[in-house]
Amino acid sequence: MKSGVRHQLAEKMAGEITLSDSPGQALKKWRQSFNIPQGLLAERLEVSPSVISDYESGRRKSPGTAIVGKIVDTILSIDEDNGGRFINKFAKILYSEFDEDVIYDIHEYASPVSLSDFAAAIDAVTLCGPTDQAIYGYTVINSLNAILQLSSSEFNRIYGWSTERALIFTEVSTGKSPMVAIRVTPFKPRCVVLQGISQEQVHPLIPGLAERDRISVLCTEMDVEKIISSLRGKSW
Amino acid sequence: MKSGVRHQLAEKMAGEITLSDSPGQALKKWRQSFNIPQGLLAERLEVSPSVISDYESGRRKSPGTAIVGKIVDTILSIDEDNGGRFINKFAKILYSEFDEDVIYDIHEYASPVSLSDFAAAIDAVTLCGPTDQAIYGYTVINSLNAILQLSSSEFNRIYGWSTERALIFTEVSTGKSPMVAIRVTPFKPRCVVLQGISQEQVHPLIPGLAERDRISVLCTEMDVEKIISSLRGKSW
DNA sequence: ATGCCACTTCGACATTTCACGAAGATCCAT
DNA sequence: ATGGATCTTCGTGAAATGTCGAAGTGGCAT
Image (cartoon, rainbow over all chains, first blue to last red; front, side, top):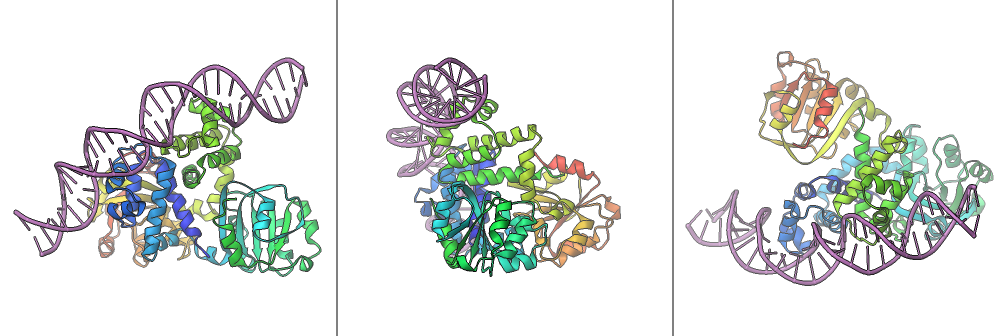
């Protein structure tokens, strides 16, 4: 679990750099806050050190998304190779306690993903609802802990940046409680995935509940770790 | 309070676009999720509509930070002109309840800001500690609510992305409780600003407490709204 | 069908980026 | 003060960006 931090951190860095009116300085700030010398960064990027300096000094006023991305990624990789000291430091800032127990993974896609592709990737069967729709992200939720720990106002957090997403509830027994929770909640996902049960074990009330909010319901028995690794780093 | 959302949202958008391996698609996704036609976006950017299309279609594979920033900003501005419907929708996702009552403003600078410049901007006097240091951000905190509402694990949130920052506690009576809170907490800011009291009213214990953690302490009587507007949108 | 609106495609051209390597500037430590 | 490590500056050339405008596609209302 939890390499979500890397991604979120990367996004934060890239966002800050891109919006800065001197991207070079922002770049420098991040390199320095990871305690990485220009030389090492250059080496890992397989460019000469002057390139880094040119960026940081602002000779290139508007670096392209490609290099910004590469630099951010390289900074993070270098830290990972050193045990991820700084990433972990920032992780504390990003994640509050409960996120780890409740949200196993949360991710946004930059472009729409069709529900049928999504279902295929996690080996899921469609219980009800259309599959010709598209989603923009997913959240993997520990069903039990979500109900135990999340207050109603915190429940929204599971939606990330878009409600056009799939909510994957793990280790459900019949799937009833997750569907009820969604029923009484203002935001609705496009799709709910019930993990850990077979088609037959699903509670008979579910199709009815789902239809009211026009939600597609899938179920899969693939295990959680595998789902997460299959979903991450998909290019579709 | 609270235009912090715009900035955070902008950063999120920019980050996602920059890291995407097809920035064009990401750009498109955001434009569409704000329900803005290409033509309008082009008009506001004062470029021809084909420019937008070229980006979104990916003819330019790695757009520079400058246009990405401009586009993101323009999308947000258009929404603001329409009453900020979508921004508000995203704001719900960004901010959990308590943030509004506790954190009045939180901001990161892309480049270091000297403490003396910072002090000048908020009309603050230095009580103790050096002023030749630099900070990377600030947080404006409602002292009373912070103590009432924040659990110890949530207290870290006030640090944002860097502890190299100023914590501005508002409406303090003597400044003692904020300093005690920091004393018993693992993270330390570079600087604490006590808002709402004069130099004479400051509790005599404070210099001692501050020195232990090598924190500079300032105090100011400028009012909170004014502090926030003075600090935001500074280029230094 | 006629037309409008939203969007795409493409050639052209000025401007920038991107990357290099050589040479210079700083700042420790020895 | 001699070295070493880190960073800066700059000229250069190939490649890509940034922008335009004209022409083309594809709905969906009239």
